[in-house]
Length: 127
Image (cartoon, rainbow, N blue to C red; front, side, top):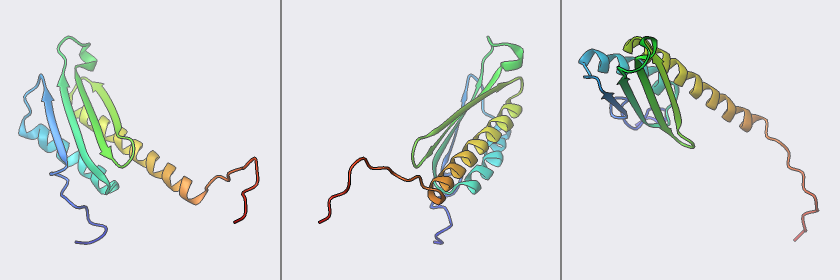
């Protein structure tokens, strides 16, 4: 196995659930297709949980809620988006998750390449 190759396939690490909605093959395929770029972007994703919820009591423009949690080294990333269409919610959520992963990656790189100095109030004893 190559060092850059993920340990398991993206399909093994993706969990899709429907809440108050029947998940069709088209919805599952849309989520799987859209989230492949997240797995390409970040190799260290342990699991991605993707929930699509249909809320009949909500406003017409916010009926479909897509929620996701990315289990990754460090704190998990959690996001949600609501819109009038399930596919639109999926697209918007994947864009949001992509932005969160990019922000996290850039923050990590910044910490590695530009460490902050530590000021000590007293001298370190010599041994």
